[in-house]
Image 1 (spheres, helix red, strand yellow):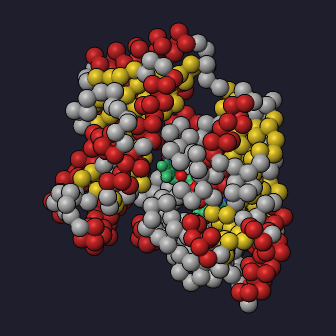
Image 2: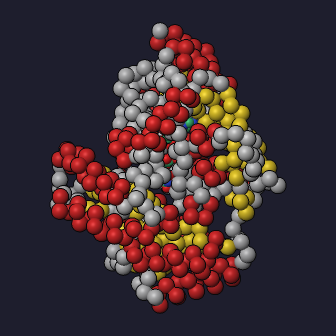
Image 3: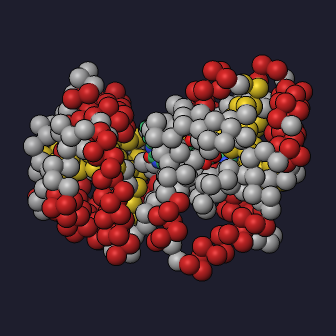
Length: 469
Ligand code: FAD
């Protein structure tokens, strides 16, 4: 049976695009290297029709289908299980920007377009596609939509869901839903688009998307500011919102521990401030009028924040290159954390007003229960979203830390739930957080999610074991 399926897949996608054995290996381990699976094959279809035919062949053979984009996900959602029966459908060959409509401010891209490629296509047409995240040189727009990715511009432009107007999807049963209408208003029935977005490959395969574009900013200002506490950073956020309104496009928080890991692992990167304060904020404003206006309004904000004691010091980027260097520091934290050793990662959100107290109390509870762990927290404070990363104690054996990790994460997530927060703000559930979803989610919601899954994937072949265990 599996030989028949392999033959069918080769006939559909072409022999060179059906990978097995060592050729398939790079696609079978997740980005964090916490999960490795096996697969009958990794297929790289080149068109929507080929994706449809691959799904139909898998349905006929009863083989699970695992959609995969850039494989940068943080929750092992694109990794097959250990059975070896799955077919990984890797979308990388579907990488055409199909059209740009500047007047309508929209762009249609195939799912396998790398995010940076979409940003560049928009820029070349004099427009902005604002989704932006550290993995943008590798992750794909299909993966971004499947995970409802967040990133650094959510504060101003919303997450991936808010940036998509329409989708083309190959359903779990191998039909093509053409929902690529680039409309800002369309109240025709239940919103299937929003159901597929964020479904992490468990309901169907996104093959293309109609995306929203925006005006390019005329001027930007970026500053890295030192602050004494999360409470002060939250006060600064309120001030920045009040003084800059929609011009405030990013507001990122980093602990000194997280920030210092970057030059420690990548010595070519320098900190523009001595990292003596406990917390740092990376702020950016985007002005659509003029350089002079951007500069005056940002300077006024920094002066008021210094005066109010919300920040102790700030480095203002003097050029685009310097601004890029500040962002490079921020975006290198994930890699620096990975290089530092074992880490228990938590992607949490809660009302910003509760974050300061949560971090102080949870840091203390972790020290009491797991002495020596180090909290390398950073994230999108403007969205109430922190990557609450707990590093193994210096010198501890990796297996000792791994043995404690389940208890440690339970402690963190119980506190998140008690604070009215979410145990997955932007990265999704994947294969790593299914038990937490089960434990912390509302039971009525869970029952409805199961019915949705049953309705759209009646055979249970789309990315089994992900989101709902
Ligand atoms: P993959 O990892 O390949 O897949 C992710 C999930 O989507 C899987 O469940 C997969 O089955 C499904 N999937 C993929 N493509 C499709 C498709 N075409 N149709 C249906 N399902 C599909 N995430 C954020 O939200 N914000 C951040 O700021 C952020 N920063 C990051 C920084 C770094 C350095 C790294 C490594 C990751 C970061 N991430 C961030 C996580 C990751 O980049 C995002 O989750 C991204 O959206 C995943 O895209 P991908 O193409 O790599 O998807």
